[in-house]
Image 1 (cartoon, rainbow, N blue to C red):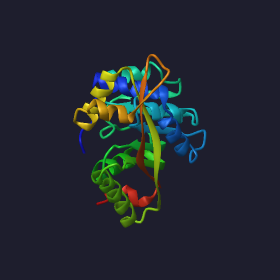
Image 2 (cartoon, rainbow, N blue to C red):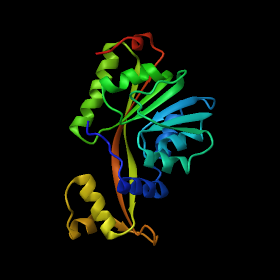
Image 3 (tube, rainbow, N blue to C red):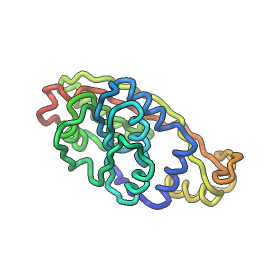
Length: 229
């Protein structure tokens, strides 16, 4: 997988998206339907901690982790009292005790994810993965095959969810698509995909349906205590 790198522009775009959209709110609603309110949850991935923040309104405590100091500062400035924010790498983090549930968003494939599951979760585990590309679909297929081959009962849900990305200016939008699509859009292309708003701070928005897959299983299954190929 391509390594995710925080930049000032990426932090700004994600912060602005959190103001306008309900992407992570709706995802948290989908996840929290399976969680009792007394749960202690560990969450890695999902915006600038946006998924962790929305889940925190449904459970007792959420621990979130990020490996970038700038992203951590933004999250800590707006997180509720029951969100614990750690600076570190989820792939090497080792807690004092297991969490009641685990939420991993675009963390990786079998080799990355399953060791984390064994290290962190004692109960329900949610693996959420983008499925926009054949490579991302392959990650989901690999995870499902590994769990099925090990005899671990699981549930898989493929769905789409609207994501709204606002922009502070026309130039801001051009920079975003150059960064995310790796090419500069023409003025005509931008006009065809951007909507104007009444918001002076964020006068343009881009709406898209993001394809996601969610794998749900119980980390307490004995088959997960040993390495799974």
